[in-house]
Length: 175
Image (cartoon, rainbow, N blue to C red; front, side, top):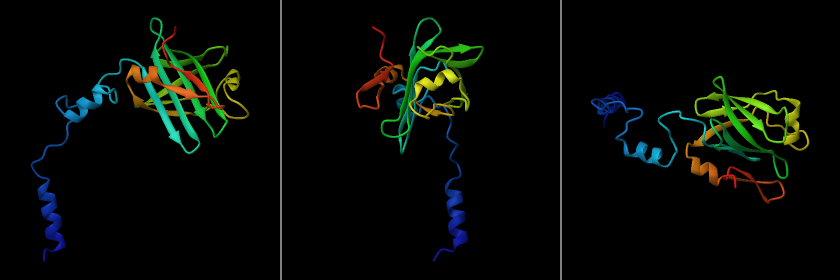
């Protein structure tokens, strides 16, 4: 019977001679497939894609597609249970290195988001004009949205249901 110490030593030696995995290995077929599907991106060209967080109360999501010039269009939804959903659309611009959401039809509802790795974070305090995006006392403040796709086509296909179950906002191309 092999002693524990010998077993541990054999396991440690079994790993010798193997190189560490290389991050961003362009020849790795798994990474190539992930890049092709838009799951990972090797460069940070822009925010286009889908950010999403699913939880027990529903789905929080943001889709972003290219707009006019250097701006992007977005659609956002945040669920707080059946019938309690915040939604809005607008433009996303890069203002001096910071991404700002400007909600359409909500003058003064401009929100600068923080990028943390592949996650967008909305601030904990929002302008009062943003309250109209949500029913009751719900809010999009403090929302954290991890990136799930860098693919602009995924963002174009994204649709968010309204609280009544009908098709709601999305990032489809403008007619």
